[in-house]
Image 1 (cartoon, rainbow, N blue to C red):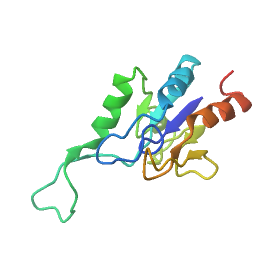
Image 2 (image 1 turned 60 degrees about the vertical axis):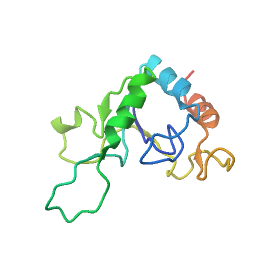
Image 3 (image 1 turned 30 degrees about the vertical axis):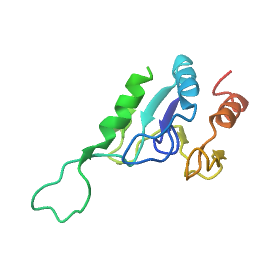
Length: 139
């Protein structure tokens, strides 16, 4: 199964532009890969390079690269980054194709609210794992 994974609030706490704190996503993400699932990083992060003549007003930085490094440092291989690498053969849609999307902003995604740890809710990976087992994605 191809699974699209958001980053901020999903793999780590919300601390953009920095990489947030660990929220126990690593064991479940590794288990997904070990069970043959393919992960596509699907995030709003990008590597921002400010052009001198650009009217855009944003801070420059390698924010997408930071997220990819997080996956690499945690030993979690990515099948794709922002896109499913095979979808170009059957669609020109910019939306990354996956059979499942895990995102803290998704309706029904179980969240933790721990103001001592983070000022915004983040994915509750123990409940996500239970749901994945319930739906037969993990055994």
